Image (cartoon, rainbow, N blue to C red; front, side, top):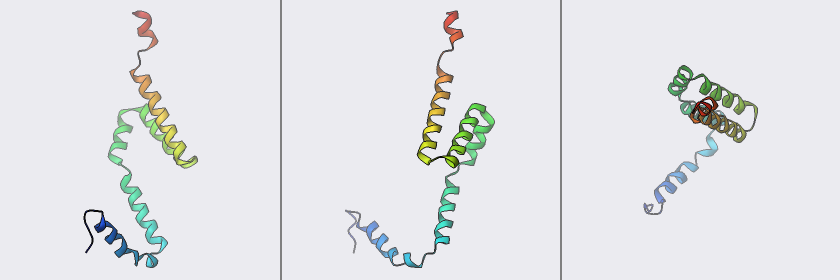
Length: 101
């Protein structure tokens, strides 16, 4: 019986499925990956962003297009940098307010 203290149960579970791996076909794995990818997309929040803020919609769109055109890590950098710039622009006092004070 597997030891539950040192993760033996999960190791036992992984080993029990190991014998089925040669029978899996690539199309099954692709289907599972597509299902997982689809479940990661949060359409409720995307619709909310599109309705509420045009600048955030632009960041979303640019990040999405960047994931298709460049490597994923650079697309994430682009999205984080654009989002940070948007946040700094929104939270920093404008030059007009500094001149009038």
